[in-house]
Image (cartoon, rainbow, N blue to C red; front, side):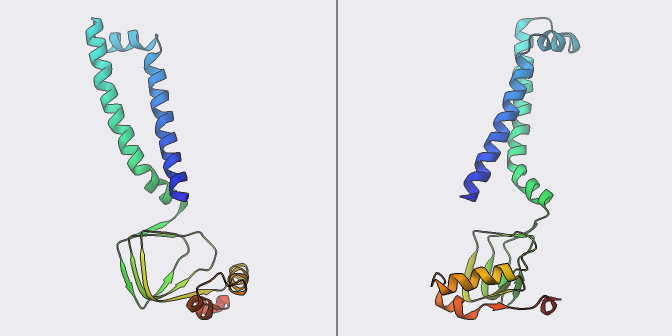
Length: 166
């Protein structure tokens, strides 16, 4: 669901950029100004110039649409971790974006101070979870009580005091 929302947002941003560019070029006052500025005298030359300029703009929009998601994550302060293999490690989740990583026999630690993202990753073997956050602990306890957690996970997670993580 989140990826669909991000994709829709990116498509919307690109659509708005294209719309704004089109409105700027279709403004009747702009075409004579372009002709005068670039010493273009015939209608064919004006059309040729606009088509070529549009091509450059569309390439720019394509670049923006590809880079925009990564830029948004950077602005939000997410640290990207791409394609890393973790084996028997304690993984700090806060403020990180894990992409195509492999986790084997790892414990995940979430303080709950910042969001995190895990995309297209593989988690194998032991899966531990630790948190000092009482809200997260309460949520996990509730899910365990309702039998909505995997039995292995429900029995292995730990709520620890903040001092433990320093």
